[in-house]
Image (cartoon, rainbow, N blue to C red):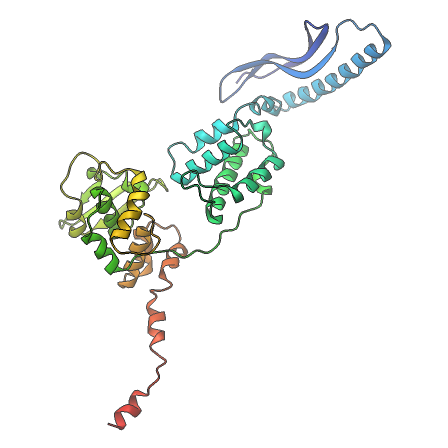
Amino acid sequence: MQCCKSVTLRFRDRRNGTQSLFLDYYPGYRDPKTMELKRRQSLGMYIYKNPTTIEQKEFNALIIKKAEAIRCKVYIDVINEKYEFFDKDKLKASFLEYYREQIRNNYEKMEASFKHFEYFCDGVCLFEDIDMKLCKKYLSYLLGAKSMIHKKRLSQNTAAAYWSVFKRMLGNAYRDNILRDNIADRLEFIPYVETHRQSLTLEEVRDMYATPCVVPQLRKAAIFACLTGLRISDILQIRWDNIRTYADGGRYLEFICQKTKRKTVVPISQETFELILPQRGDLIFRGLKRQHTQKELREWIMDCGIEKHITFHCFRHTYASLQLEMGTDIYTVQHLLSHKHVSTTQIYASHADPKLREAADRITLTDVNISNENK
């Protein structure tokens, strides 16, 4: 890699009768990432071209002295093979574009997080704009912001998720040597609050199965989610060629999870397979749109006679709860849901824990033995 051998302070005439100061690197420095050869760097300092007064001459001498001090420091860095002085150019780049590229083709919450930050900064934010003051303003914005879809105030947990994504972007920029300060480590967290995970009973799932929907694919997808635990992001992407066959004839889904980007395997029953037939096209739920999970879903749930507040993600909760209620052990459910930690799965297990249910029967209002003696 070509490196600088010398650093020289030079002057360039300007039309207004001044001179700009810049450093000249010879033979230059080639950026290892962009392979761009850099020869010059402006210092953002100016002097009078032809000073006429004592004050102008003293001003020139002071500026040149400071510029020479910078040149000496940079030259020492060159000798030590340190090239951080070029990072100033990186700070002029767009942090917003970096943010956009980092979350490209990623899951929904990351995309929503980007859109909120884009709105907050009016579509313009350079790396040099990032400081504690801006970050704290964005934190305050998130705590009072409204959803861009529902126009309702963001819940604290949603704001916490968006804030976490933003901090991750700052951390990535620091690791990529764009930001000089690891500002993400000094930012506070938005605490998550424990929420009730709404789910359906088996009877309610059967009511859904028996109730027609104006969007037939929505009905199929909702019941399919209750029987497999798939997220809407995976439901929309799942294809017929993701269905595999076991040696004994059973079937399972094998796909790359949209959220975790990990290979996921989910066994499906014969009843589940028959639910999605007949096969048409490549996508299993061809024609289903994410917007169908809003108004059309709410209206269909009401037609089913279900009064709970149900979102599409509640079907994943339903799958976990029903599996645990039916006696499936928690570690099996953990793998079925692709949870990294069993503690995540335990959230669904609180009401279905067999030991808790057994404990409830230990205290009775009648003594069985005494009752039998009196007969």
